[in-house]
Length: 197
Image 1 (cartoon, rainbow, N blue to C red):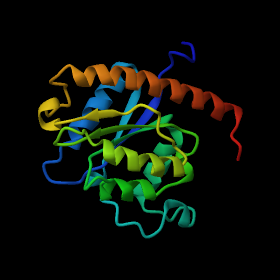
Image 2 (spheres, helix red, strand yellow):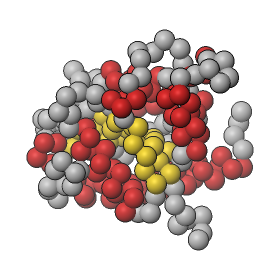
Image 3 (tube, helix red, strand yellow):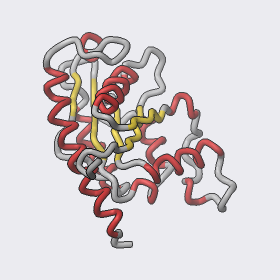
């Protein structure tokens, strides 16, 4: 199997812990699509993790003393080739559960691309949160690819298993994932050759 076709590994970071959350549909969409391309997709769900509000980052714990959930995430983040960020839009911004999840780590994200899947109940598809996310993701060392995958009116656009219910979502998703794969492979190759620090 050539480098151009070998499977990649991605962490899918879900940004909502709300009751009756729709974001899980978008996360399932991304995971199914990545797996259909032969890649590994691992869901990172802050509702299951129950991370506390940020007090200390993972790197601020002495070796071997971080909570088990943080140790497991650190190991996962170090081995994946990129991050899919699934975000709703809360008051034109980033959901607090997502920001809290992201801020627990730093170096573990470095030299890997991210890709934003955003959604909303209305017609804008969460793009205003995506604008805010780009700054944060770049600062964390996992800059977002130029394209994004917005999902307007998510309740009718995706079913409970994340299957698209219109033509718009699959069309957008194909190009979006083609681009994400390109960046993931390019940065994977460069990581093998060494990083600036």
